[in-house]
Amino acid sequence: MGFIKEFKEFAFKGNVIDLAVGVIIGGAFGSIVSSLVEDVITPLLLNPTLKAAGAEDIAQLSWNGVTYGNFLSAIISFFCIAMVLFWLIKAANKVVKPAEAAPAGPSQEELLTEIRDLLKQK
Image (cartoon, rainbow, N blue to C red; front, side, top):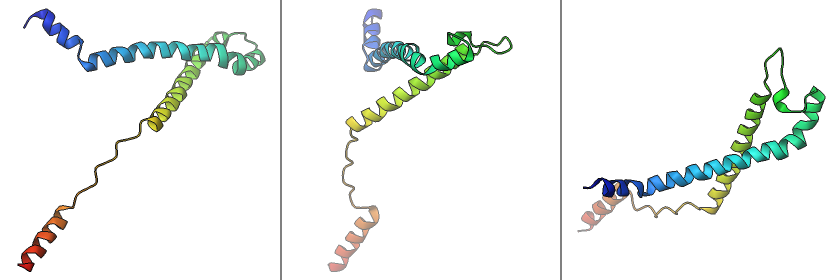
C-alpha cells in the first residue's frame, strides 16, 4: 500500500475529522468565553468590586507582592466555561432523546417454565 493511500485512509477516518472539528470549535468557543468574561462579566460585576479594592484592572490586584488578579480571572473563566458547557450539554440531552430500548424478551427462567409446562401437557 502506498504512503499517500495509507495517509488518505488515516486522515479521512471519521474519528480524525470529528476530532479536528472539535478542536476548531473548542478554540472558537474559548474566544467567546474570554469575551464574555472580559467584556460582560468584568464590567458588570467585577468593576464595582475592583474600584472598592482600589484597582482598575483585575490583573493589578495584589497582596504582599503576590499578584492574584490573573489567578482570579482564570477561576472566573473556568466557572463560566463550566456553566456554559453544562447548559449546552443539558440542552443537547433534551434535544437528542435516547433511543428507546427494545422491549425485553422473556427471561431464561420464563422460557424454561414455559417449556416445562408444554412438556407436562404432552
